[in-house]
Length: 519
Image (cartoon, rainbow, N blue to C red; front, top):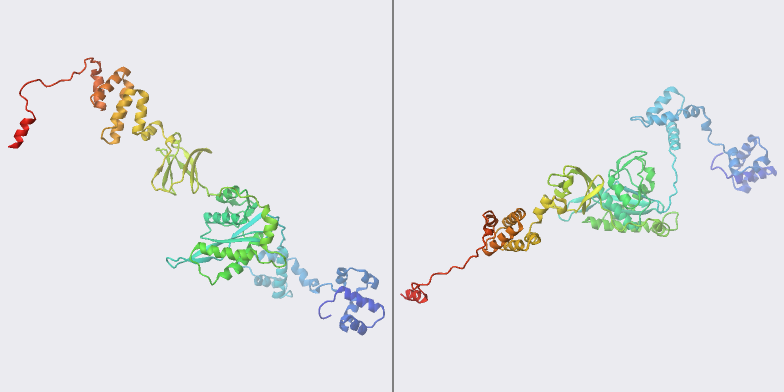
C-alpha cells in the first residue's frame, strides 16, 4: 500500500461499505481514495482472520496494530543478533579512538551477512537515544536561580589607548518564569562573580531558595557528583541571602538546560543586535545589555499568551525571599602569628593591625572584608579595626598594649599634669611649670618621670618642701630636686634675707654717663 496510512476511522468506513456489498470502485469513489488502497486494506482484513464485528469494535490504536503492524525489518534475524550486542557497542563507543566505523568492521567479521554501515549506525544511534531520555522538570515559583557564564565574550574600547577590552558575560534565569538577567564583568574571578550575583538579586528584588551555579572555580572548588566542595566566599554569600547552593553536575548541561537556552537567546537578542555598536566603557556596555535584556523579557513567548516579565511579576516575584538590609561583603580568611610588638601583618595591604598583648606568639585567625578587619582566637573575637590601605603603617588600639606601652603612648603635658595633681597640689604646680620651659617634649617627659620617681621614694613632707624650694628658685629640673633631698636642704628653717648694696658716695649715676656720651 503506497502513500500515507489512512485513519482508522476511514478504514472502518471501508469495512462497513464492503460488508454492505459495495464494490471496490464504489467504495473508493465514495470515500475519495484510490481503488488500490481499498483493495490493500480489504486484503489485510481477510489475512487477519478476525471477524468484521470484532474489528469494528476495536479502539483505533488496537485496530492500527492489525493494519499497520510496524516495520518488518525488526523481525529480521539480523536485528535479533545485533540487539543483544547494542549495550556492548554503546559502552565501547565511549572509549578513546573507538568509532562506529571500527565497531561495524568488528561486527561484520562475526556477522558477514549483517547490516550495512548505515543501518548499523542507525540502530546504534536509536539505542543511544533510549539510554539518555530527558525529563521535563516542573519548577516552583521562587525556588531556584540558574547562573552561568556565556561561552562568548563581549568587549569595549579603552578610549585612552584604543585597546579592545574583552569581558565575560554573566547570565542568570529563574526557571519558573524563564525571566533572564545578563551583565558584563571583567572576569570570572570570585569578586566579579559575587558582584554580578548581587546585581542580579537587586534586579530581581528578592532571593530564591536555591542557587544553581555551573562548576566554575569561582563557585565550586572541587567538583563531585554527590558532594561538591563549594567556594567558601559563595557559601558566605548564600548564607547572607538565606540561599542553599546546589551546583549542577559536571559535564551535565541538561541539569541547567534553561540557562543554557537563555544563553542562546542572549546570543540572538543581545549579541547579534549589538554587533554594529561600539562601546567605550564597561558601564556603557552594560547599559546597552540591560536595554536588550529588558526587551527580551518583554517579548511574547512562543506558545504562550504572555511574556517573561509578565509571568515573573504576576506569579513569581512575590514568592522570592526579602533581601537583607545590608549588601554582602566578601570575607577573606587568613591565619597569622601575633608578633612581639602585638601586631599582625596583613600581607595583601602590607599593613599592621594590633591585637591584645596577651596573645603574643599565638596563631590568630583573621577575617577581613573590604571595610573591616576582625581578629579571632579560638573562635573568640579579640580585635576589630577599620581596614586601612597605608603600606607599612600601623593601626593600633591602645587598649591592646601592656601598661608600660600604654603609659609611653599616653604621654602628653595634660597627662602628666593630671597625674601630678592627683598626687599633690605642689607637685601639680611644679609639673605645670616644667612644661613652660623651651625644651623638646621628650626631655620634659623624662624630667616628669624623674619627679614621679622621687615622689614615690621620698617622704611626702620632705618632697613637698623640695618642690616649693624649686618653684621659688625657678629651677624645675630633676637633678636640682634630687640634690635638695639628698643634701637635706629642706631641713634648713632660716629664711633667705634680701641682700642690698652698701650705702656710700662712690656711686656714678645717670648724669655721669650722660656727660661721658657728650664727649
